Length: 180
Image 1: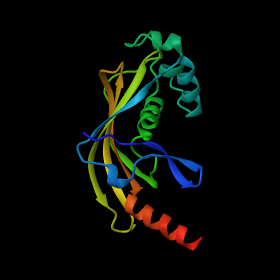
Image 2 (image 1 turned 90 degrees about the vertical axis):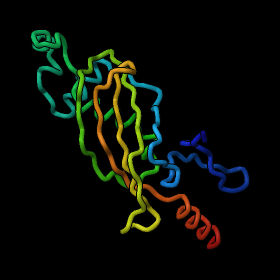
Image 3 (image 1 turned 30 degrees about the vertical axis):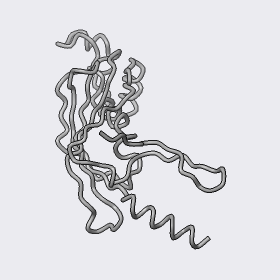
């Protein structure tokens, strides 16, 4: 099994380096599964502020008295927040080098999330192909799953993103170096 670097220092010349994050199209292998760590513990403040920021004022998320009278007995963390956090957890090892996010589909939420829960994510590479309209770039499709503590599946979604091919980036860097 081969390790994959998602963060490195690229040599610019002499003793100068630049931080570089993410993988190239060439690094993705269909069937690979990435476990995203560290996790993220959700606080009551996260839920309240983000619910209000998103204009999601449903009392199930921001009113403890109301929520105590529901089947859950306490406020639920808004799915807008959990979806965003799982997306953020998966970014470094999926689309950190991405050119564009092309969309999500099959988004499902299967279990509640509460303040105090710690979320984890994992992603499976479903498909990849070189772009027909954008030479030097490819489209990668993944399925990302969100877990609580880390074994209760609470959400899943598919996402596609546009990402550069390593070979094309090297050609561009080489051509730029020749011009200088």
